[in-house]
Image (cartoon, rainbow, N blue to C red; front, side):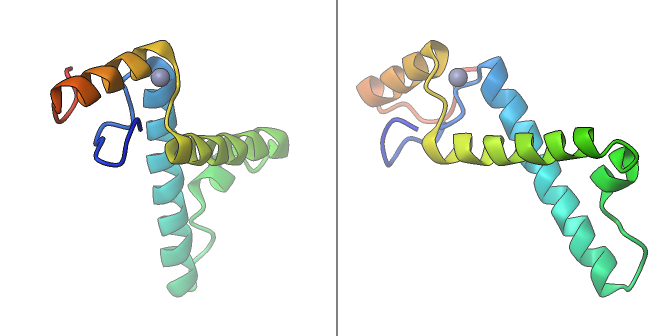
Length: 98
Ligand SMILES: [Zn+2]
């Protein structure tokens, strides 16, 4: 995110798209954990269900979601995303140019 009015903090590079997917997946997983707890159901932690037998891999997924969250705070600073933000500052253009 290049400035406060910038509304495309994800510039569209591969890394930022992966981070966005991870953030959504992590958010949905946490939502399911909450629903499962409220319903007194078994664990609805999809990541744990899928990867619980591989604790290291499970931890890596959580770590990646955390990294994605940090990226969403600071925005991606790669050349592609910065170039898009340069357009945004110059032209006051909104949205992405996909
Ligand atoms: Zn980027």
